[in-house]
Length: 409
Image (cartoon, rainbow, N blue to C red; front, side, top):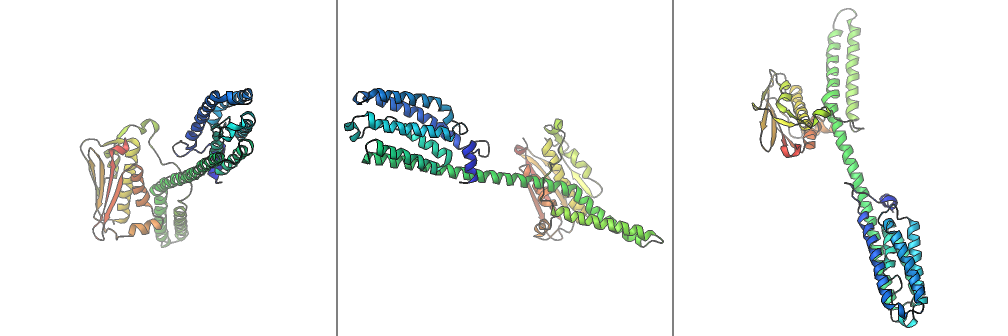
């Protein structure tokens, strides 16, 4: 049996969302046992005068009634319904079947009279099926079938027919339960992988927005200062070598950190808890990105979004602006356009830089540069929005970020 099956045998397998496919079956079996008991009592009440020893039948049915009522809660809960409970249940069913052959009239038995527990015995097989799968169901069904053949009527057509139906029902339900447990275990693992992947993406965004950019800057500045100091007189060369070494180490750490981006996640920065649910003006958060090279155009009224959404969208815009400053060239200009619509908020970032060739983003992602895939697209995906990039060599780059309002509510 699979691990999911073993886990379900102990406490019931719980699927994603907190719902178990087993619990409804356990409750159904509990109801079935009570209804089957009522059926057995009614059948015996209508025919006990034809039994050779009717008092023995009433004693058995009294014990069966007490046991059924005492274990109703146990059969409704996989944790309470232990193998010990199922073992006693099976023993009681077999006892009733054997007693039927001793207390009923031979003529009635030969004409296919039902046993004392009648269909109540099927509840034992169903309980074994849900508890442990098709194998325990087949084993318990075989025991009850043997009791029917040896203790009540022999291998008659009716007996064989009932035994086959009981075995088929028990094994089928047990097999379905095993498949359900395996599916739930697979779904749980898939959701865990998805959650870990999303957290790694958040980690990659944080690293790209902060640590990697600082390391890259230190590497460049260290190399520049080291080269300049190395050309100076006297002992300046030693200091220049030190700056060059610092730049080299920063470059090594940047490459190592990119390689480790698939490691354990850390939470992304958020607004304070007291402000998280309050609306904030997106324009106010984007205004610091404007300078002599970057023009911000926004509505005259505040563009309000909930705290988490506005923070993530502003961070995505910041990542796009950082790409402009790093890759578009010193003379390139950029424009940020904010559009506030009833259905959503759209922010466009366009530059007049050199642009890039098709396939360049895929190459950058494979090399560990995740500015677009994580800091931009990843953030918008988490918000339920979209991020589209348009570019061609010599035509600049346009990034369009759109967040639907229903996704931020």
